[in-house]
Image (cartoon, rainbow, N blue to C red; front, top):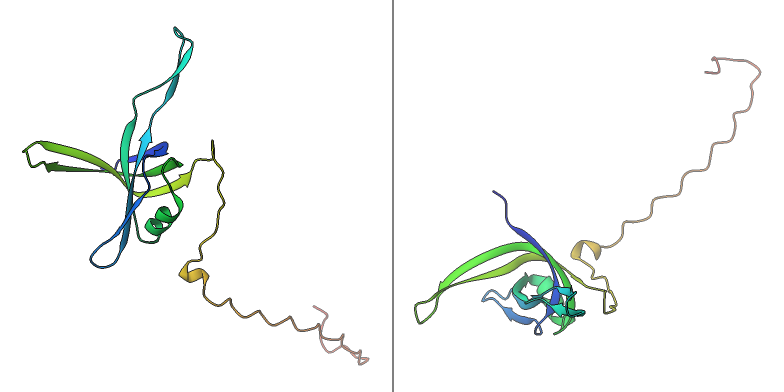
Length: 153
């Protein structure tokens, strides 16, 4: 079957952590807290639901941009694949963690403003193609010779 994809909206609980693999490939991870607000009619108050915390993992240029751009408290919208990993603690307890991988990340503009700067990719930095030569001017009309050699069409 297909991969499990998720979409979440939440806030970063800490600044992204940027590290590098042995091959020098950048990878960043950060945790996002997602919760909902509901109106409690009996108390007349808004209440926050219990948060769900998910780790988001990004690689390469996106990792560097995330580390430079995102900070604790930033509201984000994340869409990506949900990956599951199980491990055993030193005490012998089995744990399962979920991570959002290969995500698309956007800053949530509901309660904040951002400035966007386009990053040129390698294919964008190639020299622009040479301009095409201007079209040749139309040929002057043929001078009548007084005799018709060919039909007009």
